[in-house]
Amino acid sequence: MRVSRRHWHRHVGRLLAVALIAGGADARAQEVQVEPEKAAAIRQLLRVTEAASLMVTSIETSLPVQKAANPEIPDVFWEEFAARLRQDIDRFIEILVPLYDRHLTLDEIRQLIAFYESPLGRRLVEIQPTLAAESMLAGQEWGGRLSMEVAEDLRKRGIMIP
Image (cartoon, rainbow, N blue to C red):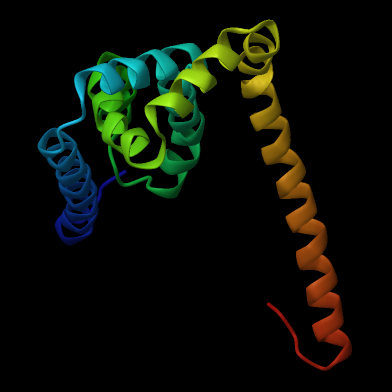
């Protein structure tokens, strides 16, 4: 498939914007100094909850949709992006550390670690990917039914939805 130069530059521009935003988040994360003991606890929490891995899996799951929505972006981009996701997970964790620092106290982080290291917490981590996938499907079905109901109600009022 041949892509016009203008079309390609527009999509490259979007990708650069995303990269700049992500780069800004990365730079902001490096600017924030988190107390070493708290930063270590946050990293432990992220490890026991598998938060970064879940995020990467979520991104990987969305790649086919993104690829289909942007057919003018060459396959090599998506392949390289997918390959780098897991390679760069440590940097993502470092971006998350100041976020967790801002919203949780050290005591709360320790309590969460204790929960996620418990049998029930381990069970939650185990089933979370399945729950997320099933919840997404349930949400799509619910949204589909809701959109049909809204469209029908509007049709009854003489408003046609294409």
